[in-house]
Length: 452
Image 1 (cartoon, one colour):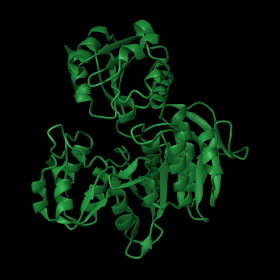
Image 2 (cartoon, rainbow, N blue to C red):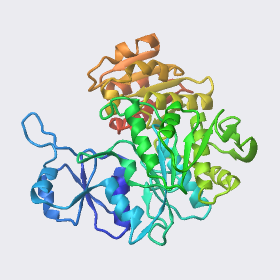
Image 3 (tube, rainbow, N blue to C red):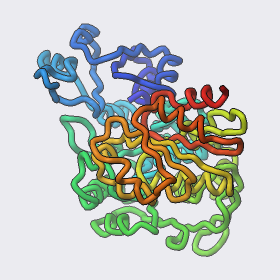
């Protein structure tokens, strides 16, 4: 929603927004753009009388224990009959299809890697002169902002790269967000069970991905991870566009070599070579997906490879927050067990045998439900010590992490987590903090504690 606000502001609108407890980097970006951010959802904001209220999917009709609405502003909007739309609907109507012309939308979907792959693809198009618009669920370091219009308002068919989420659109629209985007190029990066708060099982998510595939035109391209059986099932439901598979061992497009220096092969022939500073096998696959998608708008593989050599990654993706007394502290958005595992693997490949201390909180709706708690020992298998912040959980993190024995600790508060890390960390250690929230500013607290 912060990115939507940025696009609306760039398009010449006066924009205000409200939320609860916004944290960096988005809070910094909004402030820098001059967008007024109001704390809370008070009904008095109806007096702003905007042309449209754009509603995020955090908003609901729920009520507290006292019977009062949690989102009074939404109740006021409905009672007044004021104009409102969901974020994805507004994007589709006002940015992606506007004034009688449509952008060439390149949508990046998948359980993991959406933000990074969207950022890679936007940077490839930028470096190759296409002036793309983009909306990313993070802040790409190459751009310093999560969203921009690019050439989207200048000409029909201008490229717009968008992170395409399968989460539901709004309390009044339970379709996945990505059906509003109508891409000409769609990346299906991977697919496994997530969002247990809204999906019953993997088959329900596969059905939503099928709905996305249905919106791609016959002249469009679906770029899919050929290693994923779930995506094979999605395509078997129907695909009316050019389908191009990629992977390590399957698909027409493949990679060969270590994460920092590898070849790109199309039907067995090497067509490009990527040398860069980004860690992890998962990022090799992200890069391959971006390269294949960029080719659909005329970027040659070797050009894309040269652009990727200058890719600087995204904030909160194994982001180095500082080094104190030889201890390096990282921030990463990983919260799903598979994302945790791939992040840890990327760091392990980078640091070799040096110790990794993983500090994490199960904060996403899925993890709070405990749906994937049994996978945590698997996801943390390569760390030397895991410290779990268990505050707010209704299931036992200690029981879930018991298979790790002495390599796992469970701590109820962030302050205690900081004290624990400060006690055990040694010079040469790597402290990896993982959360899809602000984590109570733990990174700065750790750096301060380590300095004492």
